[in-house]
Length: 241
Image (cartoon, rainbow, N blue to C red; front, side):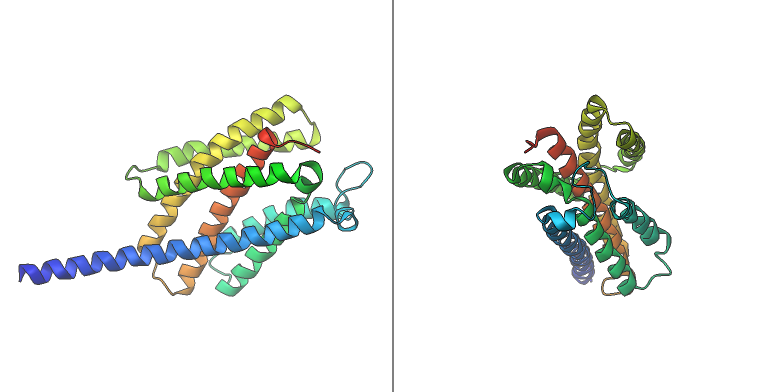
C-alpha cells in the first residue's frame, strides 16, 4: 500500500512538472515569434529609406504623424491585451500580440539607421546571455521574488516617466542614467517574470484557451523585458554610424 501511494504521488509530481514545462515552452515560443516579427519589421523599415521616411522626417529626424502613431500604438495594445484579457478570445489575443510585435518592430527601425550593424548584433547576443541567465535564475530559485518585483515595478514607472520627459526635453546625462537604471531594472524583472510564469504553469490547465491566453501574456512580459534590456544596453555600448 505504501509503495502504491508513493508511485501515485511520484506520477502526479512528474505530470505537474511536465505541465509547467509545456506551459513555459509555449511562452518562449510566442516570445520568439514576437522577436522574429519585430526584428524583420525593424530591419525592413530601417534599411528602406522610403519606408523609414513614413515614420521619421529624413531631414529633421523628427517623427511624422504616422511615426507618433506607431510609437504610442503598442502601448495602447498592451493595455488592450491586459484590460480585455477575459473578453478577447485566444485567437483575437494572438492577433493583437502579432500586431503589437509588428508595430514595435517598426518603431525600433531607427536603430538600423543610427547604430552600426556589428554593434546591434553584439548587443543582441549580450542581451540574450543576460536574459537567459536571469530567466534560468528566476525559474530555479526557491526565493520568493514578489518583494523584489514590487521594488522593480516602482523603478519601471520612474524610467517610463523620465523617458517621456527626455523625449520632449532631450538630455544626454539623463539618457545615460535612464539606460543604466534600466539595465538593472529589466535584468531583475526577467527573473521576477520568469518565476511568475512558472507559477502560472503550476495552476493553469494545459491545452485550454485560458492556458493560451496566459502563455501569450507571459510572452508579452518576457518580450518587454528582453527588448528594453537590449535597447538600454545598446544605448550604453552601441557605437553610432
